[in-house]
Length: 299
Image (cartoon, rainbow, N blue to C red; front, side, top):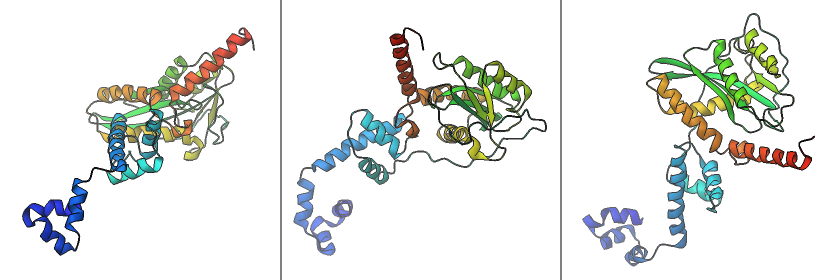
C-alpha cells in the first residue's frame, strides 16, 4: 500500500489517495518517518551477503548452497530466511536440463563385471573412480569432454576436451587421473564406466589393468548404473556450458580449467555435507599422515 501511495503522491497528494483507499494518512506518514525495524535492517544486510555469495559462484548456487556458504563464513542465518529472501528478490541457482546420450555399445566389447551395482560410495580416495563423457557445442563445432571422478572426495581427478569421441579421449582423461593419484590408500581400486565403445576397447581396458585398476561397467542404456558420473556431467553442462556458447574450443578449454579448479577447491557439495572436495581430501591425508607418524610408517 505504501509503495502505491509513494508512486502516485506527487500527482494526487497523500491525503486524497488515503481517503480513496480508506486508509489512515497519519499511519502512512508514521511508517515513512519510523526507523526501519531490526528485521528490515538484518534482511537488508543478509540480502547483500546473499547477492555476494551468489555472484561469487557465478550464479550457480541455489538456496541450499548459499545458506551453507553464509554459515561457513560465520554469518548465522536460518535456511528459511535465505529461501525467503532469494525467492522474494528472484535470486535463483542454475537448473539442470536434459542431455542426450553418447554411449554406443561396441560390437566386440572387452567384458567387465558391474562391481559397483549403483553403490557409489568409497571409504578413501582412489578406491573408486567413475568415468563418462559428453558433448559441448562451440562455434567451431561439437567438442567432447571426458571426466574421471573420485567417488570419496568428489574431485574431478582427470579430464580431456577434444573435437572427437574416439578412444583416446577417455584414455587421456584417465592418464591425467593417474598423475593425480594420491600416495595414501594404494590398495585395490575400481574404475567404473558405462559400456560405450571407448570404455570397452582393448586399449583402455589394458591400460587399467596395467595400472593395477579393476574395470567395472554398468549396462548400456541404463543411466542409473553410472548415475554419479552422469550427474557430474550434467552439473558441468548446467553450470558452465549451458550459460554460454563458446566461440572456439580453446576458449572452452580455458573456461574448463578455471571451472574445474573452482569445482575441486571451492564448490560446496551436499553429498559432502556442505564441504568442498579439497577439504575432504586434506582431511583424509591429514588423518593418514597422523597414522603414519604414530606407527612409524608400519601398518
